[in-house]
Length: 260
Image (tube, rainbow, N blue to C red):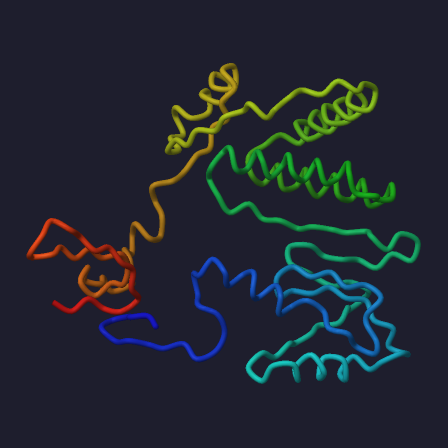
């Protein structure tokens, strides 16, 4: 039951939105059942599934129909590959007869925050060096990252420098068993200010503190809370009743609305 714009609405199907138990129950529901045939590959992220089927063993339409018969209010849809390519979440999966794990990604950085743009480029380079790409795909991906960097105000030579730096770190990491203990690192949150924020990272890192930036221009700040406020006397929770004849008190818990 939830209230909006002065009206009360009751949810008849599924778990309550915002409840901490809901994701766990949803994951239990999405656990694969015992079918007569199951796909050769089955990767799931919440309710998005990437699967590889042998269409000679079973019809894809029949398999999806069995999934949709599990629960009447939940219906799955599917998309098949086209030109040996299939988008899944934020990646484009490309079929490669020699290396089937080949992936490609086409991100767009929609932000003005310097730190976020920088971290996206670091992530792309990390991915570039850790995915099993062929030489041609490696060069293609490198050029793609350079184009992204250039369109966001960075020099393409910076990408070459970062790639060399990360390659050197990998060589250094693999050549020694010494590891830096990062468990003692602390985090601090500060509002993002372009003129002052960039120089603070190095200063705080010297005292083992990692900075995390936040923005004041949030959608909730601009629009406010769309939910109706509930009077304290209409909320369920812990209550206390004092005895009129003595100094004893009774404390209890209820889900019912308080009535004076």
